[in-house]
Image (cartoon, rainbow, N blue to C red; front, side, top):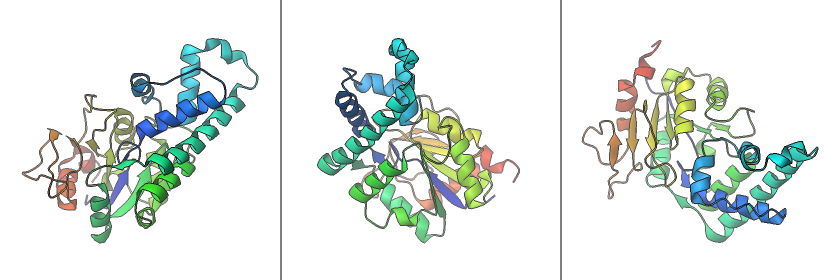
Amino acid sequence: MELAALLFDVDGTIAESEDVHRQAFNAAFKEFGFSWYWDAAIYRDLLSVGGGVERIRHYINRTQPEMLTRPDLFSLIEAMHDAKASAYGELVEEKGVGIRPGIVRLIREAHQQGLRLAIVTATSEESLKTLFDKALDKDVLSLFEVIGDGDKVPAKKPAPDIYTWVLQEMGLPPQACLSIEDAPKGLQASMAAGVPAVVTVSSYTQGEDFDGAVSVLSNLGEPAKSFDILAGDAHGQTYVTVDLLRQWHKESSLSKALA
């Protein structure tokens, strides 16, 4: 089956934004009077949990069991996450966030060549819009036909729900798509939905297990700056193009399923 659409994760894939999220969580904890502090090592571990509310809840379950009997726990977590979203917006505005190499080029190239585009992320709609408004060209978000954000489905990655929702919205079978992810939970979600995935490792996911990915790269690369190929066959290319994605998609066992 021919490649018809690209599905993009956001945090760690489009932007190196995970550490900005980490700082925003810490700001929210401080605002609510908690001494909790998520350093990079703690946050790397917590990234296996998809979704900010779910991440806070997981942390409390694991390290603050005495809080589990609080009748207001759910509303407290929701309020902390709202504060975290506000802090994230302020940090993006104040400090900016790095866009990953090759991402804007590839999005534009794919759109120009007629591929349909969608976002598949656990990030909230508010944080997603903040990132695109402040860190990317104003028109980039408009190139995406479907926005699958963290408010669309209750179960976050590694559950495949956000992929299933996006595929339904687009009216496409999974084997007609290819995803770009950066983390094991995203790869697992994509594969569980039947969508083959290319992985570009981020600062928080280097060294993780990406078994099953079509290819694993340091980044998408640019004409003047090559990617490093960590797994898979780059077919002599030094940066990712639509033609290379089509080649990888054609070679993927998932794309051949039910074709």
